[in-house]
Amino acid sequence: MSHQKKVELLAPAGSLENLKIAVLYGADAIYIGGNKYGLRAKAKNFTPEEMKEGIEFAHAHGVQVYVTCNIFAHHQDFEGMKEYFLYLESIGVDALIVADPGVFSIVRETVPHMEVHISTQANNTNYHTALFWANQGAKRIVTARELSFTEIKEMHDHLPEDIDLESFVHGAMCMAYSGRCLLSNYMTHRDANHGECAQPCRWKYSVVEETRPGEYMPIEEDERGTYIYNSRDLCMIEYIPELIGAGIYSFKIEGRMKTPLYVATVVKAYREAIDTYLNSPEEFEAKKDYFLTEVGKASHREFTTGFYQHKPTEKDQTYSHNSYVRNYDFSGMIRDYDPTTQMVTVEQRRKFSVGDEVEILVPEGPFIPVKIEALYDEEGNAIEAAPHPKQIIRFKCEQPVPVPSILRKFEQTRFEE
Image 1 (spheres, helix red, strand yellow):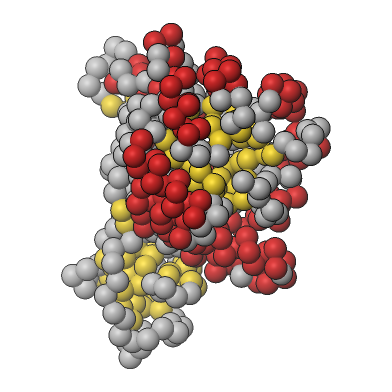
Image 2 (cartoon, helix red, strand yellow; image 1 turned 45 degrees about the vertical axis):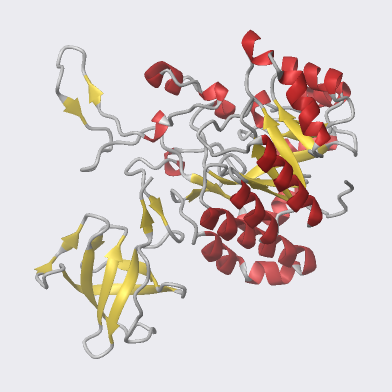
């Protein structure tokens, strides 16, 4: 199927329901996994019948479907592989995503006309590697997550015009190089490189000195533990021009384990951002905050731009919690406001102290900067500081807060894994 768009919005689907939602909310292409050979064994994934139905639905809406076959294969994994690829070809799969050279060779031998995309797992960090795969017959290179705009642009400039680049623009980041991780295998006997990752990078840890068993020493620890491996989520919705300028054709959203609500929210936000930029760069610049707020309505672990602008630092990690939060970076979510007393009721997300200047968010509304004149706990007792997140606090502001005095009840903005 020809694809004439300037860029492609590529959405994840871990189930048939998510596939249909991604299509209806504006994806140009969907990537899915079957019951074999993909790296998301915990996703619902697709039976052969569901895969066929999903492809028919997507194609009816002009949307392409790619299937992940990006495990690092062992000898036994090749049993039945040829038959599987022949089935995928028969139901109209548009491309296969592979990482292992052996798997690639089976694809080229069995379904020589099938389009092949080289997975980020293959560690595509330079244009020599990309050219190697292109010369073997690959149509698309999925760049390693460890590349900057400059490095991706250099790769693009050295590739033939008919070779596409695809890069992740949104979603969970792995703490291991190109997602190849041994923690899960070592700690739980579940092999991440075969799609069974238990995500131990999301667990909390303490340090124990060898001669002092049972004495747990903190590492930037709060009362809930330390999350020393836990990356923030990638979000590049503000950087559509830079992504296009780097030569990226396909904008890939991570999330085959995510909910239908997540898929709908993120796909819709990126669809609108991309279309706005392609139609009017000036309008896109003016609406950046809006796009960021929209994509932030899906659950996430706070945001980072990953490696695109610089090598990540401690600011790109989430050391204090493994909670998903909704909406972007703000100090608290407003629950009520009394204009007579100027008392604001907030579900806090940051430490509050008297005298602080903070930003609070009105649900489905703007960010509001306020200065805290006096601070009270949920029982109404005056306090100097409120250090812990998730609790309800009240404070008095020096200036009026421009929101209605009565706010309807909104859903909780925190989601635990």
